[in-house]
Amino acid sequence: MTLEEVLNIEDKGRRIEYLKKGRRTPLPDVVRLYNDWNPNKHEIITDKEKYPQIKVVTKKGESVYCETTKQMVVTDDTVEYKDPNRISLPLEQDIVNIQTAFTVGTEPAMNCDTEDEDEKSLLSAIKQVLKKNKIKYQNKKIVRSWLSETEVAEYWYAVKDDGFWSILKRKIASIFGKSVPEYRLKSTIWSPFRGDTLYPFFDDSGDMVAFSREYKRKELDGTETTVFMTLTDNLIYTWKVGDDSKGEVIKHGFPKLPLIYAPRKHAYCDIIRPIRIRIEKLLSGYADCIDYHFFPILKLFGDVTNFSGNTRNRVVQLQGEKADAAYLTWQQAADPIKLELETLFSRAYSMTNTPQISFENLKGTGNALSGSAFRYVFMGAHMAVENHAEDIGLFMQRRVNFLIYALGAQNSRLAAPAKTIDVDVEIVPYMIDNIDDKVNTAVMAVSGGIWSRKEGIMFAGNVDRIDEELKEIEEDKRKEAERSNMVGMTMGGY
Image (tube, rainbow, N blue to C red; front, side, top):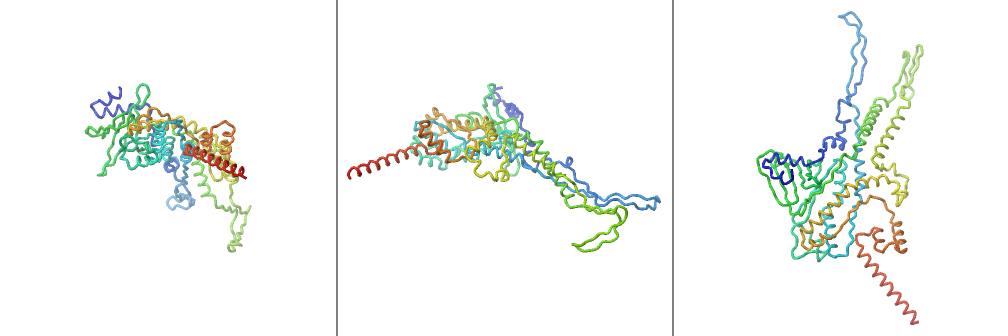
């Protein structure tokens, strides 16, 4: 069935059922994914059958004479049940957070080569929208959700303008046409951990033509209502699940679907889940060993005939065959555990191309990881970012493409450049740069005729005010030339 046929179904329940069937991949197992993400939900904490309480014998049974049977019997041991150590590790969180920082710790670059003033105005408007919505922080939430929850969506909508266009007008006086827009763009994130069940609807060609979201809404009286919301290229449908109401239909006012969606098959840390479980089991079991065997146990052989002395000069006198006293020790118990833990930690990070960034691992490096050396040391992480860019790069590109169309629809002055502008989004892996190296490289490339002065400024990192820098450089050169001419004329007069 086509989307139009599904939306025209009279029965609301069947209509929602068919919209859900437009999803071509299984829904993520949200409970399992969240249990892996939250260390307090790991099985070492919650599974009392797999990790039961420890039975501790506090007093051995004794042989006593039973008057009834006229025989010696052994009484039962006195036991206590103590909760074992349950040590959980946020390993998935650490790996995902490091991958997120390397992927969008540096904001994605927007490359646009244009000399057209209207297109420059549109590009400035796009940057202002991203800045107003704190996208540099939202990017981290999106990548983190994508890696851990397997899917995430970004929904854009219009709200009343609160000075957005006035701020932009101070920078670009010619950005308005005959009227000032009344609305500005705002965005929010939908994902499974946030309580959203997502249903993209694809047509036969594989294009996403609609998107649905099911969520629970808390009413003012304290009750919860399940809401099913569907977005198309021009309308928003909202239905309450389980009642007889017809729902609500409104226009969202954008020229295309105002949503960007990014799925993945598996959570990024699924592959290291068995390793994390084993590490938690080792740490918890070793902690139990420390608790019960850390203090030395004294073994006495023979009969105690005398005990004297105070704290410093205590004496125990034993007699009998092979009388002796010694401490019970456990030789070389920690070495195998230490080796296995170090191996498992190393495998968990190496299998996900994630560097173990900690003070212990980085101390003593000094400036060794600056500049080019950083790229070699963290090459695995940068390769992982290149793989993430296959999906996240497309997500960021679709976002910019949508903003181009949306701004063109909001502002008549930007409608024409919205049809011609070409903005290319590029994921830039996070790296530590040596400014001296970059400036020296730029100077050599520009003076050697390999790069233009504009390219050299961009490489040095001053990409926010390239045109201003070029004008100021030309102005400085003109003033320097004038001063040289003045000096020459003065010397000629003498």
